Amino acid sequence: RADSRRAAGPIKTTPITLSSRQLMTSWQQLHGGAWQDQARLSSNAERVLDDLKQRGASFFHEIRQRTGLLAAQLEQALSELAAAGKLTSDGFTGLRALLTPDARKPSTKGSQGRSGRSRSRGYSVEDAGRWSLLYPPDAGPLNDEMTEELIMVYLQRWGVISRQIVSRESAAPSWRDLLTVLRRLELRGTLRGGRFIEGLGGEQFTLPENVAPLREQARKLRERDTSDWSSADYCSLAATDPVNHLALFLPEMKLARTSRNRVLYKNGVPVAVLDGARVKFLREIPAEHQWALEQLLRRQEINPRLRSYLANS
Image 1 (tube, rainbow, N blue to C red):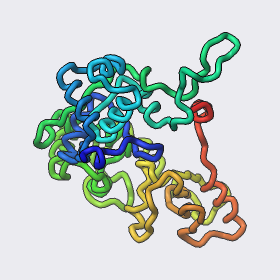
Image 2: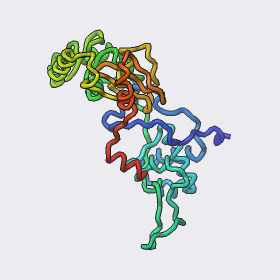
Image 3: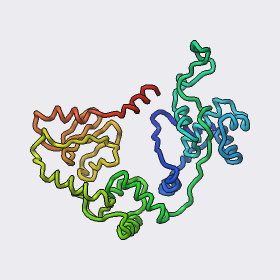
Image 4: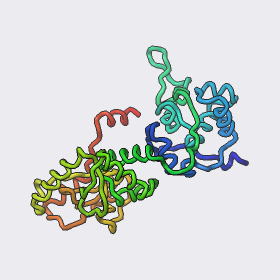
């Protein structure tokens, strides 16, 4: 009865993480043994797993010929393995195919256009390129080279690194291990240490080219009139945005980190949040400005290319 407890495949709401190949090993090591789903696989998924262990990266039709599975059975098996973190493919087509509802999947029996060719919608798992296994990483902490690469990722993400900021990561090296490498990079001239973000205690580090812009921005904000709501600089961020540090500055303000929730900053200070469909003001705001701030919170700019892609997907 192993099939009755088989791993579920990915669905439309399945969380997805994008990672570069260069850093894949680092992320896997940071998550330890939890990086792969331990759900029990179906017999078909186990058959595909064994086949790929023996033959290596293979195309859909090659796996199908060797395992003797039907196309639908093989697609379900690949879906289980992908959801369990044991499988990857050459591109995004495979993932799109696994997430595409059955009603939108291409069919050889579909209607034909004037050219006589079958009109197919969605993405086909058969066009996904090669499928290959993901193997568990070596046990143990990151070496210095891997830690330096991770620090550069953090700097690209946040601009500034501090103990409080790193503590929000669900999987990260200990601050002691990071600090040793950070100080070494500072001595080497790769990083600069100092106090760059007001309200964060302890040592902070950033890239040398960030120091002057950070200080200039801080100077401009200090010179602004805090009571001026009309000409202030506003920034609306999704609660999921890595540079949204609301929890660090207002720990009592609980806001779920979902893409629908947003935070509005005025001159770098959080003033309002969009929690679900409800706007909450974090400080006293003149009545004549409240409607405009609500619109800033609710407005979401979408890249035109992304909008076009979503419309056709």
